[in-house]
Length: 186
Image (tube, rainbow, N blue to C red):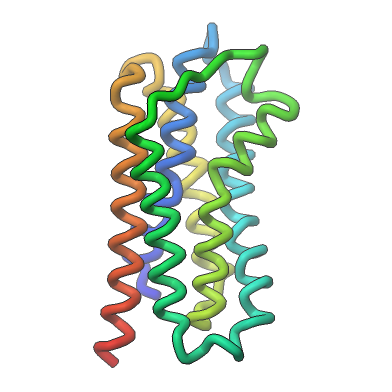
Protein backbone atom coordinates (compact mmCIF):
# COMPACT_ATOMS: atom_id res chain seq x y z
CA UNK A 1 0.00 0.00 0.00
CA UNK A 2 1.52 3.30 -1.07
CA UNK A 3 1.95 6.25 1.26
CA UNK A 4 -0.52 8.28 -0.81
CA UNK A 5 -3.13 5.50 -0.51
CA UNK A 6 -2.53 5.31 3.25
CA UNK A 7 -3.03 9.08 3.64
CA UNK A 8 -6.15 9.00 1.44
CA UNK A 9 -7.50 6.14 3.56
CA UNK A 10 -6.64 8.01 6.76
CA UNK A 11 -8.41 11.15 5.54
CA UNK A 12 -11.45 9.12 4.49
CA UNK A 13 -11.62 7.42 7.88
CA UNK A 14 -10.98 10.70 9.69
CA UNK A 15 -13.97 12.45 8.08
CA UNK A 16 -16.37 11.06 10.71
CA UNK A 17 -14.09 12.29 13.49
CA UNK A 18 -13.74 15.65 11.74
CA UNK A 19 -17.52 16.06 11.36
CA UNK A 20 -18.15 15.10 14.99
CA UNK A 21 -15.34 17.42 16.14
CA UNK A 22 -16.93 20.32 14.27
CA UNK A 23 -20.22 19.57 15.99
CA UNK A 24 -18.57 19.28 19.40
CA UNK A 25 -16.71 22.53 18.72
CA UNK A 26 -20.05 24.20 17.99
CA UNK A 27 -21.81 22.97 21.14
CA UNK A 28 -19.09 23.47 23.72
CA UNK A 29 -19.63 26.77 25.48
CA UNK A 30 -15.87 27.44 25.53
CA UNK A 31 -13.03 25.76 23.69
CA UNK A 32 -9.95 25.27 25.81
CA UNK A 33 -6.91 23.02 25.61
CA UNK A 34 -8.33 20.20 27.75
CA UNK A 35 -11.47 19.30 25.76
CA UNK A 36 -9.62 19.74 22.47
CA UNK A 37 -6.81 17.45 23.66
CA UNK A 38 -9.22 14.85 25.12
CA UNK A 39 -11.28 14.52 21.97
CA UNK A 40 -8.26 14.59 19.63
CA UNK A 41 -6.34 12.04 21.69
CA UNK A 42 -9.25 9.61 22.03
CA UNK A 43 -10.38 9.83 18.42
CA UNK A 44 -6.79 9.31 17.23
CA UNK A 45 -6.24 6.42 19.65
CA UNK A 46 -9.43 4.62 18.65
CA UNK A 47 -8.72 5.19 14.95
CA UNK A 48 -5.34 3.53 15.56
CA UNK A 49 -6.67 0.62 17.64
CA UNK A 50 -9.67 -0.35 15.51
CA UNK A 51 -7.68 -1.30 12.37
CA UNK A 52 -5.44 -3.40 14.63
CA UNK A 53 -8.47 -5.25 16.02
CA UNK A 54 -9.93 -5.74 12.53
CA UNK A 55 -6.58 -6.94 11.20
CA UNK A 56 -6.19 -9.46 14.04
CA UNK A 57 -9.69 -10.77 13.39
CA UNK A 58 -9.04 -10.91 9.66
CA UNK A 59 -5.81 -12.89 10.03
CA UNK A 60 -7.79 -15.83 11.41
CA UNK A 61 -9.95 -16.16 8.29
CA UNK A 62 -7.43 -15.03 5.64
CA UNK A 63 -6.53 -18.49 4.36
CA UNK A 64 -10.18 -19.30 3.59
CA UNK A 65 -10.95 -16.15 1.64
CA UNK A 66 -7.69 -15.45 -0.22
CA UNK A 67 -9.26 -16.12 -3.62
CA UNK A 68 -11.86 -13.37 -3.27
CA UNK A 69 -10.35 -11.02 -0.68
CA UNK A 70 -10.31 -8.07 -3.09
CA UNK A 71 -14.08 -8.40 -3.49
CA UNK A 72 -14.52 -8.49 0.29
CA UNK A 73 -12.34 -5.39 0.68
CA UNK A 74 -14.39 -3.60 -1.99
CA UNK A 75 -17.66 -4.71 -0.38
CA UNK A 76 -16.63 -3.59 3.12
CA UNK A 77 -15.35 -0.22 1.94
CA UNK A 78 -18.41 0.38 -0.25
CA UNK A 79 -20.64 -0.62 2.67
CA UNK A 80 -18.91 1.73 5.10
CA UNK A 81 -18.57 4.52 2.53
CA UNK A 82 -22.19 4.10 1.46
CA UNK A 83 -23.32 4.27 5.08
CA UNK A 84 -21.35 7.49 5.53
CA UNK A 85 -22.95 8.97 2.40
CA UNK A 86 -26.41 7.86 3.56
CA UNK A 87 -25.82 9.36 7.00
CA UNK A 88 -24.76 12.63 5.38
CA UNK A 89 -28.33 13.10 4.06
CA UNK A 90 -29.98 12.52 7.44
CA UNK A 91 -30.70 15.47 9.66
CA UNK A 92 -29.30 14.77 13.07
CA UNK A 93 -29.18 16.85 16.17
CA UNK A 94 -26.40 16.83 18.69
CA UNK A 95 -27.79 17.43 22.14
CA UNK A 96 -25.26 18.58 24.62
CA UNK A 97 -25.50 16.57 27.84
CA UNK A 98 -22.68 18.03 29.80
CA UNK A 99 -19.25 17.98 28.24
CA UNK A 100 -19.16 15.53 25.26
CA UNK A 101 -15.39 15.24 25.70
CA UNK A 102 -15.75 13.43 29.05
CA UNK A 103 -16.96 10.10 30.36
CA UNK A 104 -19.09 7.63 28.45
CA UNK A 105 -20.05 10.19 25.83
CA UNK A 106 -16.39 10.44 24.88
CA UNK A 107 -16.05 6.64 24.66
CA UNK A 108 -19.22 6.28 22.59
CA UNK A 109 -18.16 9.04 20.21
CA UNK A 110 -14.68 7.48 19.92
CA UNK A 111 -16.10 4.07 19.03
CA UNK A 112 -18.75 5.49 16.70
CA UNK A 113 -16.24 7.52 14.70
CA UNK A 114 -13.76 4.64 14.41
CA UNK A 115 -15.96 1.59 13.77
CA UNK A 116 -15.33 1.88 10.02
CA UNK A 117 -11.59 1.54 10.73
CA UNK A 118 -12.35 -1.96 12.06
CA UNK A 119 -13.63 -2.98 8.62
CA UNK A 120 -10.57 -1.42 7.01
CA UNK A 121 -8.31 -3.46 9.31
CA UNK A 122 -10.20 -6.60 8.34
CA UNK A 123 -9.73 -5.71 4.67
CA UNK A 124 -6.00 -5.15 5.21
CA UNK A 125 -5.65 -8.59 6.77
CA UNK A 126 -7.41 -10.20 3.82
CA UNK A 127 -5.12 -8.36 1.43
CA UNK A 128 -2.11 -9.37 3.53
CA UNK A 129 -1.15 -5.74 4.17
CA UNK A 130 0.78 -4.99 7.34
CA UNK A 131 -1.32 -2.76 9.56
CA UNK A 132 1.05 -1.08 12.04
CA UNK A 133 2.28 1.77 9.87
CA UNK A 134 -1.10 2.48 8.22
CA UNK A 135 -2.75 2.27 11.65
CA UNK A 136 -0.31 4.79 13.06
CA UNK A 137 -0.88 7.19 10.15
CA UNK A 138 -4.67 6.71 10.46
CA UNK A 139 -4.51 7.54 14.19
CA UNK A 140 -2.32 10.61 13.74
CA UNK A 141 -4.41 11.96 10.86
CA UNK A 142 -7.63 11.41 12.84
CA UNK A 143 -6.16 13.25 15.84
CA UNK A 144 -5.08 16.18 13.69
CA UNK A 145 -8.43 16.26 11.87
CA UNK A 146 -10.24 16.23 15.22
CA UNK A 147 -8.11 19.08 16.53
CA UNK A 148 -8.74 21.05 13.34
CA UNK A 149 -12.45 20.22 13.34
CA UNK A 150 -12.94 21.54 16.84
CA UNK A 151 -11.16 24.75 15.93
CA UNK A 152 -13.32 25.18 12.85
CA UNK A 153 -16.55 24.16 14.58
CA UNK A 154 -17.51 27.62 15.70
CA UNK A 155 -16.75 29.13 12.31
CA UNK A 156 -18.19 26.63 9.83
CA UNK A 157 -21.65 25.99 11.22
CA UNK A 158 -23.86 22.94 11.00
CA UNK A 159 -24.61 23.16 7.27
CA UNK A 160 -21.18 21.76 6.27
CA UNK A 161 -21.27 18.62 8.46
CA UNK A 162 -23.08 16.41 5.96
CA UNK A 163 -20.83 17.43 3.07
CA UNK A 164 -17.73 16.46 5.06
CA UNK A 165 -19.17 13.05 5.90
CA UNK A 166 -20.19 12.54 2.26
CA UNK A 167 -16.65 13.28 1.10
CA UNK A 168 -15.30 10.68 3.53
CA UNK A 169 -17.71 8.07 2.17
CA UNK A 170 -16.74 8.83 -1.41
CA UNK A 171 -13.04 8.51 -0.57
CA UNK A 172 -13.60 5.09 1.05
CA UNK A 173 -15.56 3.84 -1.96
CA UNK A 174 -12.81 5.14 -4.26
CA UNK A 175 -10.18 3.24 -2.29
CA UNK A 176 -12.29 0.06 -2.54
CA UNK A 177 -12.52 0.44 -6.31
CA UNK A 178 -8.75 1.05 -6.50
CA UNK A 179 -8.09 -2.16 -4.52
CA UNK A 180 -10.25 -4.10 -6.98
CA UNK A 181 -8.59 -2.53 -10.03
CA UNK A 182 -5.11 -3.16 -8.57
CA UNK A 183 -5.98 -6.84 -8.14
CA UNK A 184 -6.95 -7.22 -11.79
CA UNK A 185 -3.93 -5.19 -12.98
CA UNK A 186 -1.54 -7.79 -11.57
